[in-house]
Image (cartoon, rainbow, N blue to C red; front, top):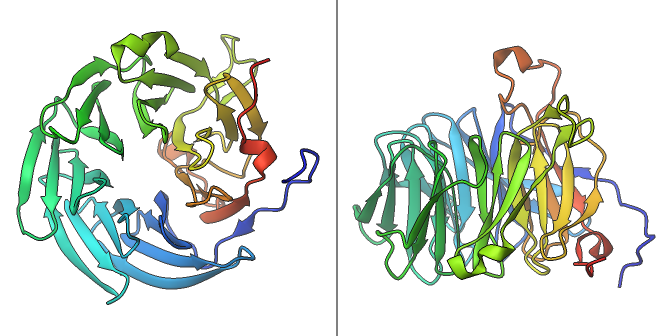
Length: 338
């Protein structure tokens, strides 16, 4: 067991990162492969070694910025979506990428549905489409109120967040009809939704430096709460500077979670005891994407501009990078309520 006073190991940079803004990161569920999508149309894959070093393994392109990616449950394929309105499928064995999905606008998010050969794609064309990879056409489609901004799935639960701050919850036994819809508990634009690894709920992050913990069953509403984060100055102060929460990642073992934001900040949290577990030193730029590996021993995060401050906020000196942060058990393990 790792000791609580063990020094934090240094983060390790992934070799040959994308040369443009990084939009998404995904670790394989069965191996040490890491994938990233970027605004220069690329999808890149690395193998992460035991010592934290990395080897570039593959790269393929969309015809416009690549926006999202996720590995299949068996780790054999990577699905990606982009501003070319296309979903692509990369086969690790053959090294070939083929198109499997098509929308009328960019694909912002996609998820494999547990226990099936189906990928759900969510788009700015205000639809979610479910694709059986054994056929060329979607098996079903859902009309949304507005553009899809974020989507996540775990077990039978799929959660979709749209531009109008609406959140729709679907049970995959009836994937075309939400069993519950609601307005986001946060007042401003949604940036990310992330399902609990323990089931039964999800977290929402917004541009206003807030996170909400939300349970799907109304009878569990007493467990819902929100909190301020990713701010400079006293969080309660009216003049504090507020940053977007870009990534919420739940730990695969402990069910605790990490947030990362436009302020370059990373924080580990325990939702059950409502405690902050660890605050990391601010990074050189915004963090647009982050994820844990399958064992929760590595937290990968991207440093690149997220356009949260528009064109004027872009710095030509900011280097695009992907970093691997070793995760100490003492920093992410749940703690008892004080």
